[in-house]
Picture (cartoon, rainbow, N blue to C red):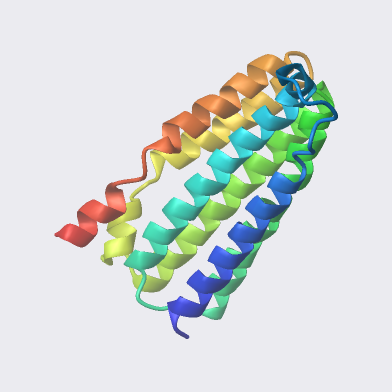
Length: 191
């Protein structure tokens, strides 16, 4: 199967996810800037989630660019990732609407954790299919940054129940860690 259909489908799902998230930003009742104040938690949760979806879209694009073909297993691994990402709008809205309360912040972390694990599975499935000496396998390497991210999510989930602001800071730190696109694949493809 051509990887083009997988890329197009994934791009469409990610675009829909962003669209659903922005629909949670309700127009305030009032014309002054002070009417925007109650929306600040909703906007901040949207901003963080938008950045996360952008990071996944960017790295997913680069990873699939290095792949030459896809299999049924790769399709299922990709759907697994998209499943967890499709829950981001729900937890984003819940977290923002409840002003970063402990349980919504923890569940937000669970979704980030599961999406991180799903991305790791997709990457390993692609690398395995293409072989240990393939460009994609060499580019992905041992994925230390991915493993660190998942570990930080796990710590933040536990912290969220007692210190949701600290958990939010950890989620933001992971996003900043990934904000610069993963250059490993570009380097290997340029060889």
